[in-house]
Image (cartoon, rainbow, N blue to C red; front, side, top):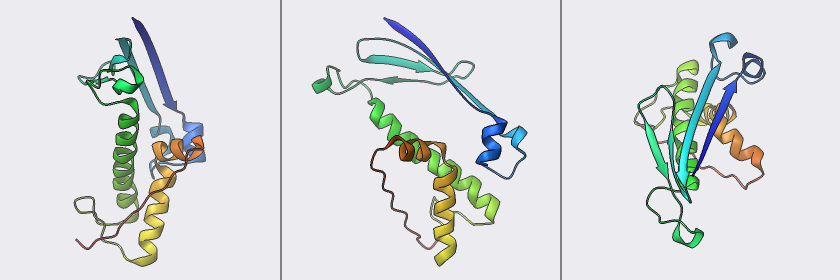
Length: 143
């Protein structure tokens, strides 16, 4: 059995260098802490002080039982969710109307929206800076 604790904090200094939103930097500190326990490839992860937990496992070819999503699946889900959350913040900052995660913006404004979302999203930046090949496709559909 093993146990780990991970903390990630975006400091005000980092936030001023790459602003997430239009709020003052002192309000942009986002402390995140997770803890996990497990045996073998199966792990239960929780967020102290929050009611939610999740379980991760891996594929049988890697020695797991495939009893829960793999860390790679959670990473991709995190990327998708982070882009949507960040997109909502960017849209609000720029007066862009969002539908069911469809955007109602035209031409160049849409390209700027996408660029700003991917610049501000910490998970997108994590993928891009990791050295993996990162590609995204955004489609602007009418509401």
